[in-house]
Length: 266
Image (cartoon, rainbow, N blue to C red):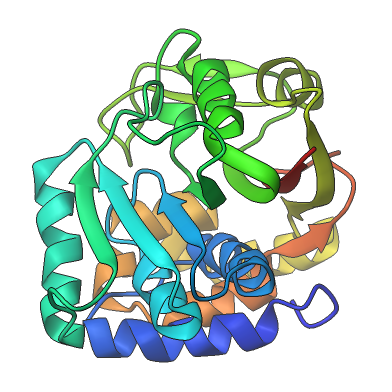
């Protein structure tokens, strides 16, 4: 995280999460820091920022407080729209602030052509069935101004797969291989400016970890055990150690389980 320029953003986001009373998460520690870094580099007062599928993400309010761009936290789910509004109350953001929470469909955004400077979609478009991910990318490109930045993060796998549900998410999710990333998400007018892939630590480290914690893992992977037991809610700060110890960052998609991609609109 240090070499990739993410460590300082992880620390600032960690403190911001404490203010919001929002837990941290193993993978979001990486993804959110990646989005925050590119947002911080792109945004300034007078710019427009749209976050897609904001959920319980701390990134929209974090970047708003840091950069003071007009910010839209968007969702389809009323529960999470209310979550972002609760964040506004906690931070005392009101009518004088240019921070807005509104319902948006990623495949049919309400924003004008070339009207947005930054779009972030962290672990969002993989949940849109059919060709929803590709249509969303087209919409993000449509609303971005020339020189605008798009940040997208998605799960990856050795082969492209679509799941109708998983034990941790009761809905559709796809995982991308390198070919699917290119065919479904890349567009000729969007230049890829940074790509980081989350990959596991060396096999010998994982083997030692499995042996050391075998009594708790019961033959399952560490990540499955972590989420199935609800430990991500009970021990959220341990996610920091797991992010640092169990995730390496690589520019190569081989063997990865997650992709962080940043594009610039040409």
